[in-house]
Image (tube, rainbow, N blue to C red; front, side, top):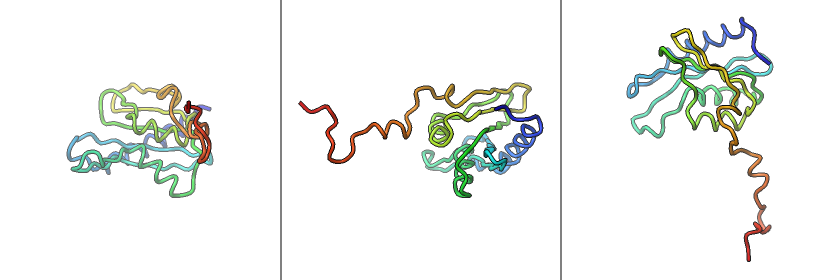
Length: 148
């Protein structure tokens, strides 16, 4: 279900505010994300870089971590803000993490420019790997069906 104009404005402001807290001395690419729960709560996150680049945590994953830590598990909308002329969609790692919790979430990418991108996570990460794949895996003591 699409969000209202008021919800969009609130999410955007939360993401912009979060981006101002980003720790991005290496990329100089601040990102803010705002996650809307089914009960109307908003959790924001920013990117936090690390000199060991692989340990960097993106804004989207920080917002999800905040929500999970608060006991929330159901989400409707994720809005990402970048201080760019064109909107930026989530990276592959973030797409995978978001899919874990909300494969049907609406993702809205906004920027300083007039454009925005709206897509479902299923569109951004089609045929994703997830918990459903693990349900199909053999359990301990079962055969995989690959034996001769």
